[in-house]
Image (cartoon, rainbow, N blue to C red):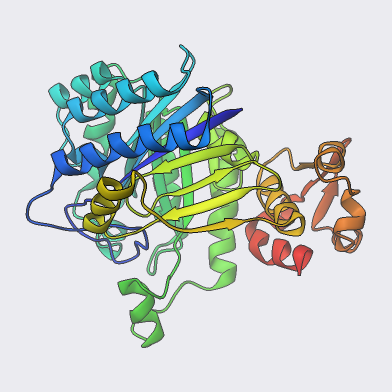
Length: 381
């Protein structure tokens, strides 16, 4: 069994008003205590679930702002992963970072620790958009961070961008895309702004203090991203993700393909393909996570065993987000049920032009990609 590993570092210098991730802002980051808990959890979970070390295709350090931790912490974590699992020279190791607070020496130390792919949370190259998002860095710091990453030897860099921000114009988004593609990162992720109930933006929207862009405006921004990035030579391999040829994110591809993954850290999620799938989630508060790992070797808060129907829904929802779509032969082999019989609304969505047949199955039609969520909801309702 091949699997991906996600390691969650929940600490951040500030909480962005749109962020719904498990993030903590504290005066003192308990790095040593947290890393010790991660090391124990990695060893314990590996021996609990696997008699023999499985192969790991990718490791993703996310957050939060994991780059706040010292490079040696990632070296310790990667050394433990290499001892407990099978890792090869082709493994992809990613680290998320904010554009501010990085310097050349630290980035070089991350490289020496084993980080090979850097994901920079640029979000925008427009000052007004960054302020509207509550970001504390500047457009110049975005460009500087990318240059430092290259100088430090990173040959695999992602830039995160956000669209659909109140006040954001088609012209400013066009400039964001031009600047990002002009830097020539290997990967670009474009995310539509969401208003989750637990976030500051979600609460302001509920009070009428923040008015989202209209659906048609967001659709134009999404369509522009696809147009500009495809024209710049990027391949759209998932609804929100673009890569230069051959530089797709291995971690993303594995997870979207329905592969097993282990999540370590506070609030991390895991999924192992046994029977129809086993899923679990760790406790969210970091202190409670550390305590649970000390006492039990793991911090699972809840575990669920998927039924076949649940697994089929997850597979088609993930599959149709990918450019290649869903393979009917693979689906039938995995679940013992023809795809069109499991989801009879496929024919209706093909007739309406929202799904397009492929030689092996179906994918989202071009016109449906901007409204993918509603199409997928209709399919599995």
